[in-house]
Length: 246
Image (cartoon, rainbow, N blue to C red; front, side, top):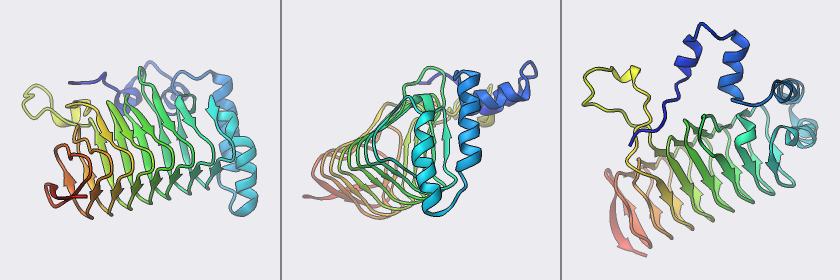
């Protein structure tokens, strides 16, 4: 399956668009010019301020960028928000310093973050015309990447260690002789990626396209998941294999 192509390089090479329109397309999509300007002002004035003052000012101003946002959301310093009109955030969510939440796409649903979710420092959650749903009480540690050009779901009550990588889509067609890899959209996908509730991922776990994981699973540090893991399993290795039932 191949999703609709959405490449930033193609947008930037379009000579018919002004620099502002290109910037707006990449960062904001079809948001109105007025809302784009509002977001730019808020980010420029308050995004960089450190300490308690910065947290307080962002808590007051950042919600104006979103269509749907819950109570008591904490926005860290220098975070990147793209296409905020396609991002929904629940109550008591923490977005730590330097993280990225990017819902870009032309036909996708965007990103939905449930209640009591923690997104660690430098973690990147981004779409390439895909959709991402993060359930309640999910803890994403620092330096993780969650990518979707299809649909990706992280089940509730899941704990994810540092440097983990979840990939829904993002594949290239090595049989295509007419286009180089750089010319392809990089959005080919075998299917949705679903992580069941109440899972624990050790550091540096990689979960590849369509390699779903059932409820109540533990993935050992460094595991590379290439095919589905059944519920109530402890898995480890490259590729990941079930060691025992839990």
